Image (tube, rainbow, N blue to C red; front, side):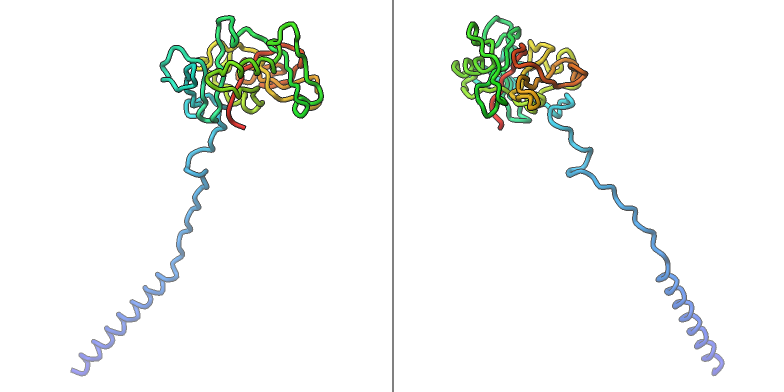
Length: 233
């Protein structure tokens, strides 16, 4: 009987020793490091595109407007202006009727405001006032185009925002901006290095203008097209 108790005691001691050894090995087992996750932009996905720069439907958000500035359906066949809901800017639409907004009209750059003209106003033609940008702006505001009288020349950034880099000749969505010539359109910006010149955007090949640039500068007495804008700023 005594030997039987000794055998049981030895068996219990052996079981206790094996259990301790196994527990020790588990504690010392090295853990596999977690692979760090790659940072993403807010909301996930790729870095957002700059509005108005790649010509995709997800960037441009144009709406046609009637003669009173009210929104129309995208299927409308007659419209008088365009609202860009991405930027909040309202744009002039060109026509082909020999009227005030005709696509063939050219303008010399003129700004009588000494705070913005760089020290040289440009050319104000007395024989035909509508040959200059300031008189064109004043005339459009006088007739309350689309129900508004705060139309103005666009800044360089504003005009560049409707350039469609996926299109060419012209580099703009003609489903919303018909009768757009593939040529230079004035901005409101004076050229700082030479106040006899002003900046333009070239609506040709989505970035190919003089010297293969989207933008450039021209003599203020030169003729360029104009597309007026309101809102923003």
